[in-house]
Image 1 (tube, rainbow, N blue to C red):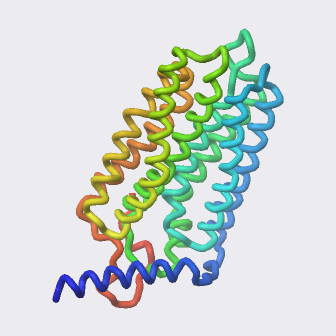
Image 2 (cartoon, rainbow, N blue to C red; image 1 turned 45 degrees about the vertical axis):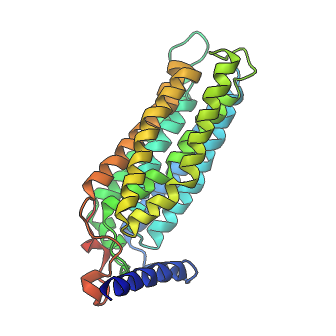
Image 3 (cartoon, rainbow, N blue to C red; image 1 turned 180 degrees about the vertical axis):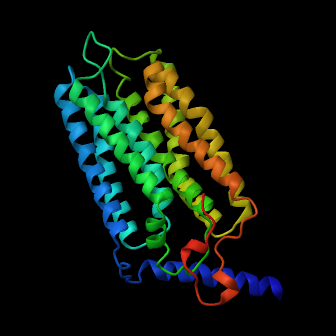
Amino acid sequence: MRVRVAAGGHYRGVADWVAGLFRRELPVPATTASRVLRAVIGATAVTAVLVEAVNLLSADEPGFSLLVRSAWALLRVIGFLFLARAVRYGRQAAKPFGLVLAVTTVFAVARLAEPRRGGFLPPAPVVAGFVLLTLECVAVVWLLYRSAAVEAHLSTRPVRRHIPGWVLTGRMAVLSYAPLTAVPFLVALGTVFSAGRRLPFPTTVVLLSGWAALAALLTFVAPFSSFLVVVGRAWARWVVGFLGVVALLLQPALCYALLGLDGLIRDGVPLAIIAVLGLWALHRSRGLSTWVRPNNGTPATPASASARP
């Protein structure tokens, strides 16, 4: 009987979460800190677009790889819009989302900063824009994690389900595995019939097939399994950990084999950092209660009561 009650409560919790997806919510009252944070987020998005545009215009030979990476970097502007919305609505998920977005944005733009032919550094406007973008990303992360006023704003909305901060951080890291794998895969795919292919054609095709399988695995399995971690499924933690280890080992190796040292630095290192963050978040969240009603079913408490990294 106890098992049935517990299971029933769990499924009711999942049903409440699904219903919440279609429930209209109003933003929490804005504060000076939230306005400043949203302004910094907006400035970061604008800077990213300008740096990518300047880099494309100054590139000696804009090839397929640069176009793919530029398109992916531009998509991050949408991510910043969602981050600003999360801040406006006072969601605690804004913190890990902002952390992962800031780290990967710096690497995404760094991948575009190609030096001029015969030089060691990109053009001065690209370097200046990259430095400015890095400072803005640091400012976003600092405000999210170190500003007491921002913390108070993000704690305004009562929580229906308690989710520790480390669990949310792991969830956001895992969701970024697939795009961080797909972008270098597309770049490597463009070298199959080009003079820049590093390996024989049959070997390249085999490695690309394995890379496509890895991307598919991270696309279809990682999001669902990380959600099960959020709702407290212990076995899902092993699945997420396995995916993180696989991504950490295979992605840099494939980048080096098909794209060389440049590809390893540009595309292998970012996923390695995010995978380490995801595994560390998984380790730090061991034994923490997640997806439970605050205070054993009493009225919801502010999100500041949640554990956070």
